Structure formats: structure tokens, C-alpha cells
Length: 223
Image (cartoon, rainbow, N blue to C red):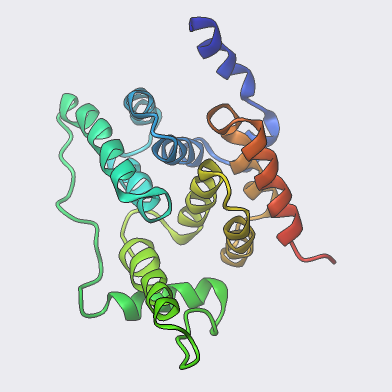
């Protein structure tokens, strides 16, 4: 087991370091661990991140942001693991990072969603089935209203986290393609996107990594 753990150290690369700063790397790893349910490792990674300049609020938000993409239960278990480290270090977190209310979460979510993906996204039309209307509304008021509007992390970082969690999930190539466009829209480069995926090879394995890379390459507009 020790030998396998030591092998993870070989997955560093100058290409990744050139495109992602240390803080971003730590947040993406923690989000990926949330999706893969690596709860004991989240405790270790949380301690390491705190020791290397990442704040508790940023760690919390990386885990929270993962919730709608990998499932709330995984995020709850992950935040419980991180909270053990915060408690050991006597770190007190704000009660809430929410910036929306029940009354405006849909409106604010749709605003963020359209700022990333364009003015037509999130439109509910009469020809949709009732189920389609529900999931379209969910995407706007939950994924974007409840999470993208929260404090501490900017939209560029949140889009990279989304992409990382989708990669960790596996089987989300269609969504990876959409969020590749989203990442480019908010200012992340192709190299930053690919670095985020390559960073987490040790946690996701090669098949999911290669599938994600292929989805990214297919989504990027040809010149």
C-alpha cells in the first residue's frame, strides 16, 4: 500500500504547474476526492491545503460546489471529513456563504447561467414536457442559483471544479463538452482545462481521464 501511495508523487508535471496555481490544484483535488468518495484522503488533503495557503472557506466551497454534480450525500460526507480537520485546528467557518434567497435563487441562477452559456440557455418553452420543464428549472435555480452565486470562489474556479467533478463521475462526456465551452467563456484556457483533468489522473484513472480529454478536444471550436 505504501508503494502505491508513493507512486502518486510521480504524477506531477511542469505543464500542470505552469497552468494551474497551487491553490487551484488543491481545490480541484479535494473536489475530485469528494466525487470519488475518498473521505479519509480528504482529511489528509485538507490539512495539506491549509498548510499551503488555501483557506478553510475555499476548501468548504470546493466541496459544496461538487454537490449538485456528484450528489449531495457525497458532499455531506466530504464536508464532515474536512470539518474534523477544521475542528482540530479550531477554525470557525461563517454560518453561510449563500448570497441568494428562496425568492430570487432562480432569477440569480439564470443570470449566472446565461452569463456563461449565452442568453438562450435555461429557457422554458411551451413545447417542453413537464419533466423537461422541471429539470430545466432545477439547473437554473439549484446548480447555478444555489451554488455558482455563493461567496469565496469566483466563477472561473467554479467552472474548473465542475469540470473536475464531471470527469471524476465518469460517463459525463456530454456535460464535459458543455462545460468546456463554459470554461472558455469565463476565461479559462484550453491548457488550464486540460491541466485540471491531467492533475487528477491518480484519483480518476486513465480511462476516465482519456474520455474527458477526448470530450474537451471535441468540444473546442475548430479554427
